[in-house]
Image (cartoon, rainbow over all chains, first blue to last red; front, side):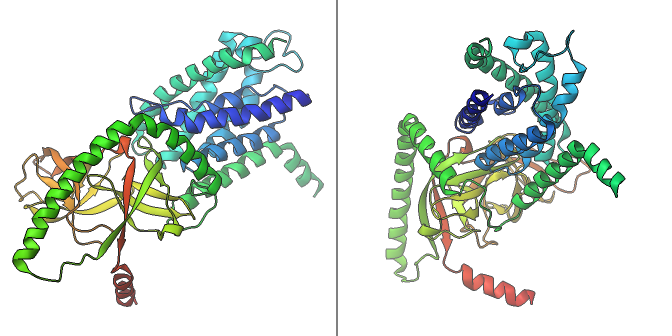
Length: 172
Length: 271
């Protein structure tokens, strides 16, 4: 358990630094953003309490916000993501429930389970993010394009990072 | 009382969710205010330092491009300088001292694809920067200083859907408005040009003298698309911005020496 906390602590810095120094500067077609820090929030273990989860989401969001001068935007979207996570866990419970101490990663739950779970959450996270950023529903179709392109960009980046870094330590 | 506590306990997750959303929206609203000193933005010492280090690494990759740009600018300035010197000799007037002075600064963080884009530069109150000052790039206007830290400041880019700039179209019309529409970082819109003016593609749009932020006559862009629907009161004009916002690296912050005087006059009028 303790080891997990320490690993997650380092993962936080890793994800946030990569996000603000590298991925914030990579924009696809002027509309697609990769918010890879979402991968950090998605892969917390199933048993994590929802209140703690939302506080972690808020802290992560605010940290990313400080670096991109968009205070509150990422925080709001991340809190929403962490709030909705348990609902999706209930929706997609596999036969025999979740093994104890398991995490929602592709290596533990399989790629198809992970992609449904994460695509839905990333879509909701990005919808919240871009609508709050636009300050409402004007520029709606432009915002919609941003949401859809960014969802796929973030999803593929998150999956790649999972297979690159997270696989070994999860299958132990 | 007991049932109230029971209610709060049962819905604690939802209540915390609502609370955190309120906190986020509070931050969003507070962040959009000018001149509100908040600690949590990139003028913060730690954040600014990290972004500066990262931008220093990236700078090496752009050195040749920046050098070419500076060379070009130097040549243009030298030309202008000579022309002005000749003019002074002809007129022999001593009244050529400018009201504006400039602080050089480096861009350490920049965004162009959001709707409210900001730029972080590596000078702050130590260099004499105050919120509200204008910022110029190599070729034209860039934005306006929003927050000032000791060593870093954030600048609201011209690429912000809430920013409007008082402008004029050279030789055509001496007051109109430039505003970004949130789409391409290379283009902006010119608003409120009545339909009786004759415009042409390639007309240059410059800052008007009706503001205390930018000196008059600083280039903004070049008219690239004109549209005049039959039922419209105003033209729909698109301009191509002169500055390349995607590769900003060096900027100048404008100090208007007359600003305190202008401000105090405005305040007397308002009172």
